Length: 109
Image (tube, rainbow, N blue to C red):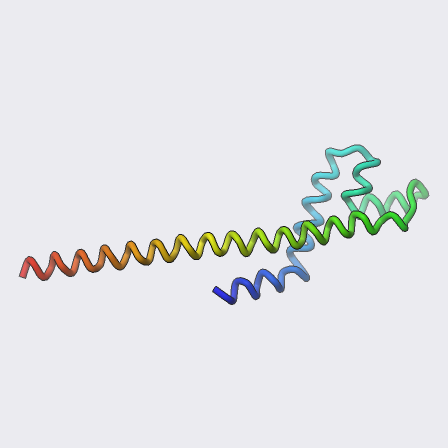
């Protein structure tokens, strides 16, 4: 259980940032160029290099990316907690079934 939380926290430095950046890039493809600059940091940096925008405004998509990263980690942890609760319920059902089978075997003897 705790190993998953450690894993979820360590992915903040690798996979979760990439997933958040990809999701924001994907969302940005459906937005106007003015709005895309606020969401996709790659678009912001590209526009700044081309002289369309100002590079000092690129902190906004980076901040949004960090918020999405934290939300992604929170979602992963909540997903695991839900799975863990389901596994506990399944284990409890399995124990009850095993006890019922034992009682049937005892009754048959």
